Length: 121
Image (cartoon, rainbow, N blue to C red; front, side, top):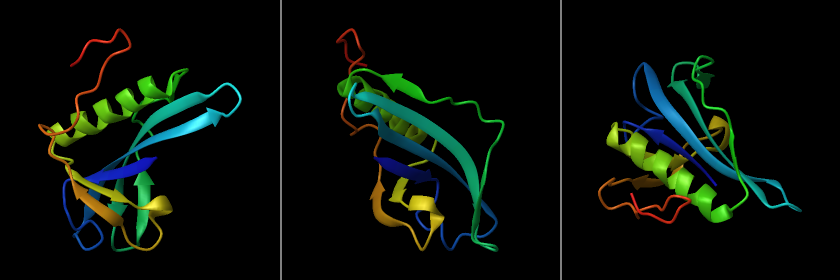
């Protein structure tokens, strides 16, 4: 699962550098069922149609033995970024072609996630 978050609903036509966050959830180890959540920050440049990743953004991959806990973390990151204005969500694998599967995120309507101790946030 991977989503690219922007502050604009038209990232492929916006002028200048367009800031984004990629939030991903993947399965690292099929046998042990280890899930990984990672966040990447960068900018999309429509002039040269290339993404530049922020090398100084420190968000190492987070591993989870529970897929449910990984989903909770994935949702928490999406809500956090949506509250900062990154409410336009797309699928845009490798920044090839154009973004698809547009969804505007309403952080107040997002499902509540639970922490590993079972409490809601």
